[in-house]
Image (cartoon, rainbow, N blue to C red; front, top):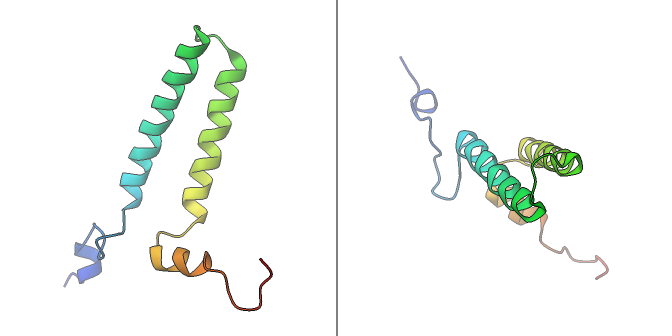
Length: 86
């Protein structure tokens, strides 16, 4: 018998986003960023632009993998605790 977790491919809480949606958003973000970057440069054979776009995409992808998709955990970790210097 299939469990609820196996059946449910979406997220349980309304604030959560699935990894597949995040990957699609990342791809769209990189495409839009690339269009803006290369349109403003006026050419597509700009090697440093491609390098920056690739490195930026990898960094964003790695941060998506490392940072958990738990908004409550992220909110808890971004709060200033007692006894910490400001």
